[in-house]
Amino acid sequence: MTLVAGVDSSTQSCKIVIRDAATGAFVRSGRALHPAGTEVDPAAWWDALLLAIADAGGLADVAAISVAAQQHGMVALDDAGRVIRPALLWNDTRSAPAAAALVAEVGAGEYARRAGSVPVASFTVTKLRWLRDAEPAHAARVAAVALPHDWLGWRLRGFGPAGESPLGPVLTELTTDRSDASGTGYWSPRTGQYDLDLFERALGHSAFLPRVLGPADSPGATAAFPVRSPFPGSQFDGPTPGSRSEVPAGIVVGAGAGDNAGAALGLGAGAGDVVVSIGTSGTVFAVTDEPAADATGTVAGFADASGLFLPLVATLNAARVLDSIAGLLGVDHTELGRLALRAEPGAGGLVLQPWFEGERTPNLPDATASVFGMTLASTTRPNLARAAFEGLLCGLAEGLDAVRGQGVEAERILLIGGAAQNPALQAIAAQVFDRPIVVPAPGEYVADGAATQAAWALTGERPAWPLALAARPAGDFRPVIRAQYAERARHIR
Image 1 (cartoon, rainbow, N blue to C red):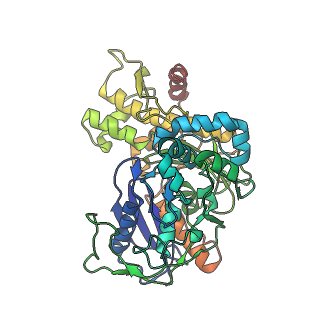
Image 2: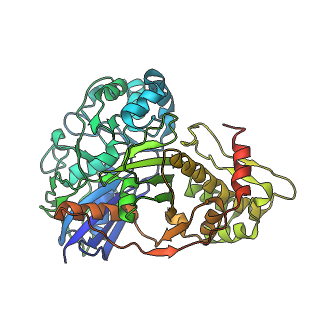
Image 3: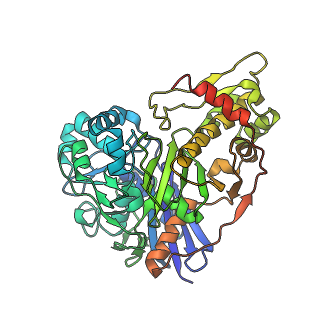
């Protein structure tokens, strides 16, 4: 049996899944936590990756590995390969004014034409402009800019600062892939090239950018080094007893991917499939033959990890909406779902606009959440619980409308993410969306997509692994839910 490994380095944690390259059969897995916050020292991701590898029993029998990770995060490196400052993550909205300035300078339509998307605060290009303006001394030191998966793959191959890596700070060995490059705001899915004018407009000077690989390409292989933390006081400062103590040399490394492209690859999403993912953020995306270029900025015209394209809408507020209301009501997610299903569709007129941490779609980085329609009759625990589910899902349904507006045909919705396993969310989703819904079995689909990519890089052929389904909620579309949400929302945009 030939084994491959896929990594999902997400906002909250690092997961690794090891599978049989031929059949996709699950073999083993590991995980480790990431620190909270909207800016993180990349060393914490490296530490978590090594811990996850050890937790999975090591890589001694693994032939190939690939890393998918959260998109947009700005990893700024100096000419010695050192991280200049903590990486700003996708959900750090301090760069919202920088985004507005860049769009004003270039024009929304021109930006969409050149980069496939109109940048908002989450995009790397806006964080570079913020760095130029807020921390000019740091900006002046930038010799290369990488994304989270770029940097982790570079480190796996043995590169990094002198004294922390076997091969040293060779910046020209940084690589990325189409999907992650398309989230920077300075790479064009249409042309397949960096737009250096957009990059330099943001940072203020030129710097090295990772070489963009194709879906089946490999930048090289792993280098051997001990599984030890590169900084003291971390969650993992030595080999776990009974685990492998080294990352072996010679494991083929795949091109890597952005997290949503990784999920699409892991799901085997094809024409007619729209993926709705409910995690820390919410996303709606589809695999298409043609690139999108939405001048309104609602749909990001990303590339995918298979050589095609991935029009995508993202929301900042997703599963944590349920966390917040469950905490307010003093219940867990299971009981929150039971409460929600006791209320009628529409929650008696109670509407939650769940912009707890600003919002990306619509682009309102300073927005806050609101509750509408509170009367003595409507203000009940069941109605508030249902309003949480309905508000979360209505935001995603608006995203689906926007993706359809780019010519995407939605024949079925693949509902994924931890919250998707909640029976109440499944039932209410069938009332909010007007298309058939399927819920894949619980899984680490971003990591599975990376494992698919690892197998592709190893064999030269994309594997076709089966997809198990957990549920098919019966269609029960209730227009009242979206109608009252839209009526309330339009007054505060």
